Length: 317
Ligand SMILES: NC(=O)c1ccc[n+]([C@@H]2O[C@H](COP(=O)([O-])OP(=O)(O)OC[C@H]3O[C@@H](n4cnc5c(N)ncnc54)[C@H](OP(=O)(O)O)[C@@H]3O)[C@@H](O)[C@H]2O)c1
Image (tube, rainbow, N blue to C red):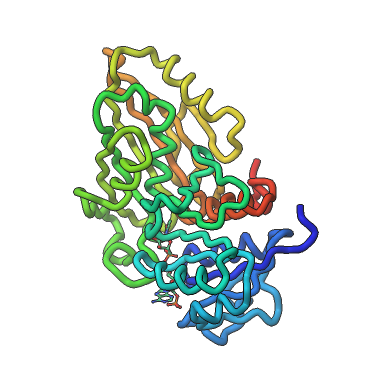
């Protein structure tokens, strides 16, 4: 742990992901959250909304220029997709050494940014531009990566998310009344996370997303045609070897369930099943979309680039 706390600005703090990031950062010994932005909550004490906030910290409707003037060591952008460019441009122009972690999808395809999925691509110390992976995209990659080299055709990924995945702007996909006793499929062709995973893994994927009535969590069921016949034990061994010693990833033979994983920082991969020919594999993954799918992952990345232990400030077993 370095002696001086590093200062952090959080842009988009009112959102679901922003709120989780604040909880983590307030409890972190190495970071001092000096600026939290929200236009809607501007002027309100952060402590009114988030437990653990220091007295005197207020939400601010800060512009990018005002953020840069405060010279933070790091800035986390937790804004809707499509807005990051203006913030990055202004901050980079005035203070290029500020670490920027973008949790939106805006830089996930940009080779100038590190795509930070720590279990597969740890962030090197000193990285200043980090694109945080998407929540469904994280679940898909963790479920597929250990067997990506033996897959014969694009896996099919059936994903179900809690409605916090749709953010706080009202829509049918985060309307509890619409979702009650319901399951809502959406965007079965060309979903952003389908492109993201196909871009990151050595195999393309197919992805059919759904949203359900629970608030947080993702269940991902992945069907994979394999290139020859395999024993189940050999498949399980691939996952266990790939994730041995990876602290935020539990591999289990049981099918992981959302309710057991929601509110936790780790992801679960398991429930592996093979058909009689040994050529069709189904694997399951669960994670909390707001934690491992967003805030936890952003903090892992920030810890790694700042030279802290990867799990500093992240409670884990
Ligand atoms: N929710 C998830 O499960 C999840 C998982 C992984 C990644 N992500 C990504 O993380 C980002 C945030 O997601 P979220 O679910 O937290 O969204 P959200 O709940 O809708 O929050 C969006 C935040 O951005 C601010 N904002 C909106 N428009 C703005 C603008 N024009 N200028 C400045 N601030 C603006 C909002 O605050 P004010 O309106 O008060 O300013 C709010 O704090 C998104 O890019 C999302 O794709 C989300």
